Image (cartoon, rainbow, N blue to C red; front, side):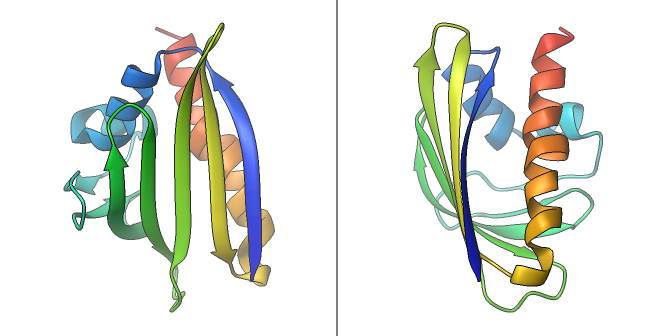
Length: 127
């Protein structure tokens, strides 16, 4: 298993990003896909038409989200911690993704860069 940590800058406030990660209608807008989400600790979610499923472990509004992720036929959960910090250009989005299967690592990293954070950046840049 591998780990991944990276910082991104997104041109929106931490409040906007937090809501974009925890509000069903907003997630549908920036992903373009079917979403099911129960944004409370212990609540479950499904993103990208079920490509990623999991549950919320911790929610600190506008600052931090910790989730347990499963993708594909993965049996062991990955843990995703997202921290949001104010930045002069919007929000510093810190992601720490642990327990990534080695055979899926490159695809997961591409997913963070392109689909997940890339889509958020595009969504807030095109407003």
